[in-house]
Length: 292
Image (cartoon, rainbow, N blue to C red; front, side, top):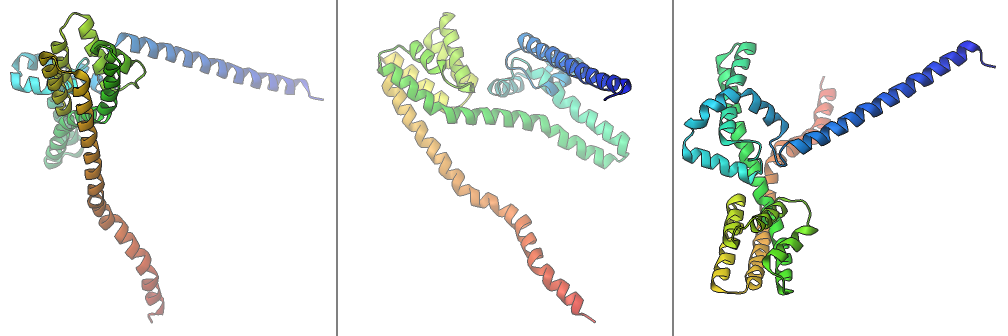
């Protein structure tokens, strides 16, 4: 039989675990509601959270740089931000303010901590390249995704047009059950432009400007030419689809041929030395043991 103290201890343990479980459920519920509210209030394709923090910290510099940025630099940054789908949450002058202030802050911090000017200058030079590298890589990933997904969408558009549908109907059918990708969002934006009253030529040119891909630019030019001359859009899309497939296979063959060259560096620097160490270690140890 358990004593009264034992029952009290068991009851207190159960109460503590039950309270901890209820507290965890409450915290998770509040966190889930907070995430839903945050996603509902912020732009759909905003900048990453770290960039949003840096936007707030560099706001005074961004206000000063806003009217002083050259038109060419502003358009270049805006184009890359638009391709990377973060132009709704990050403006060109904000990006430029981050690219200027971040290296200075890091350089001053390294100088205070380490006290060496050379190390601070090296850190400043490296950090100064990081925002531009990140923007270029983000835009390059989006362009690669467009090239990878474009043939599938062209095939769906071709089938819809050959079945007798118009271009707006074909766009709707191709985007209804497609996965959530950059190209799907771009085609949905074209549908929104058409519903808003823009002409087909204007909507297609806006698509080419937003994606900034040579394949999409060539596709839009061919569609506009066929639309103005009264040609068949289905034939144009089928020819574009075959050309994009050929280009994708060519890129795959090029990547396969480049793989051995890219593997040569790790092979020489990592695998060969380890192999030589494994083979030579027993021989060296035997000579050491046999030596007088």
